[in-house]
Image 1 (cartoon, rainbow, N blue to C red):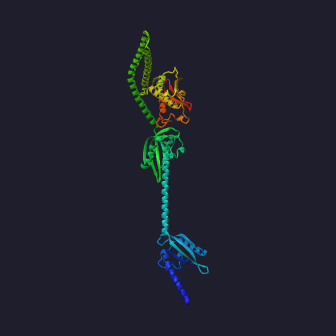
Image 2 (tube, rainbow, N blue to C red; image 1 turned 90 degrees about the horizontal axis):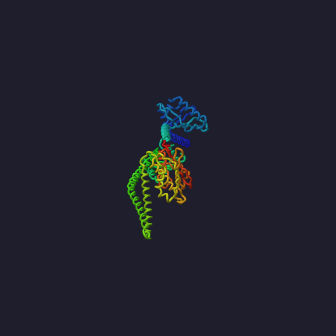
Image 3 (cartoon, rainbow, N blue to C red; image 1 turned 135 degrees about the vertical axis):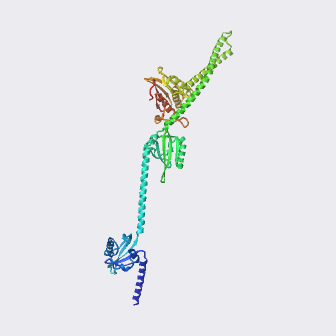
Length: 532
């Protein structure tokens, strides 16, 4: 009896403990018999089912409760599946429509309730309301979808902007470069490729500032540095070297492009090479005109006194010769000392007359070369023009090479601008002098040949200098192209010379062999015609 009382006491304690657990557990717990009728449930289940007491639940099946039939049938299928299989069904989600009509979601587990002999006599179920978690998950999912749609929209806008920018780049009439923040080329349009004379693959990845000549690189480097700070810059008349070795002049406008954390530098260049060349030619022409006016004024001032000097020197020379004849007729002839003095005076007068005539010729050549202001064409004696230029360059030529002139006596006058033509000849002669300076004067020759070729007058100016390398030869008439050291030339001489000849209806060609020399062949129409 004592043992029985002890066991009953323990059972009461366990029942009390279980009842306390079922009462306070935050989950709904229920148990049913083999027919699916409720045997019991905790208060949380009754609350979820909208029931006030356990009496209204006991002995009833789900089909008899106030719930949608489809829901009740689903519950019973799960119940009988667990009881017949003897296997639990753990943590599955299922819907529940409350008596208020509100739909909730449950996280449910069902296990078979077995007799000590292993026979299934019912089942026990437990579920938790996960509606709030589901709502939060759905809210997160909705937010995720919204973000994904927004990101997709932004990506579409970025792609559209990229395509639009790419279209504008490809169809822009200006050279467009897209650089990364470090200043290296990421992309460029066909105009930029054409201006720099290279393919897209050859130019991509290069530092943009590397296209600038070394002595003009700092302004470009400073502009790119400012661009990263202030967002936009402009740089006018920026020279750039092309891949082929020529030089172009660009007006640059750049802006900073920021997309998210990505920073890009957009540089737009307007090719002003021809404009710059014309400006430089205009400056050169104005300088020549000013020099010509000065030379004409100086020549005029020197000419008259020089005429007096030469006239007096001639008179003195004649007087000296007459004095010599008089002294020779005297008895005893000319004293030795007087004869020495007369010889010295003769040499002095001869040297003075030679120097005076040289000054007179220089003055005449200055007046000839000063006719640079007008562009009008008039009949020009090419031989006289060449002679003037050779006399002007004599000071440099005599220490470098000898001159070989082969003039065609039948060459007629040609319509040309005398001053401009002298400018062309002088430029070619000076270039020839520079090309021959490395050799010995006795081995060098400047050859000037003229001839008539049908309706054309041909002038060849050849030197025996170093020659022009084949890779340089195609570029020598390009503006700003020069092989001379920095500061030794602008690279405009041959470009301007070609322009001058073309305005007169003529042209210029060049042939050169390294180590042998260079020949410039100039052509001018004997009769006026349209420019070539």
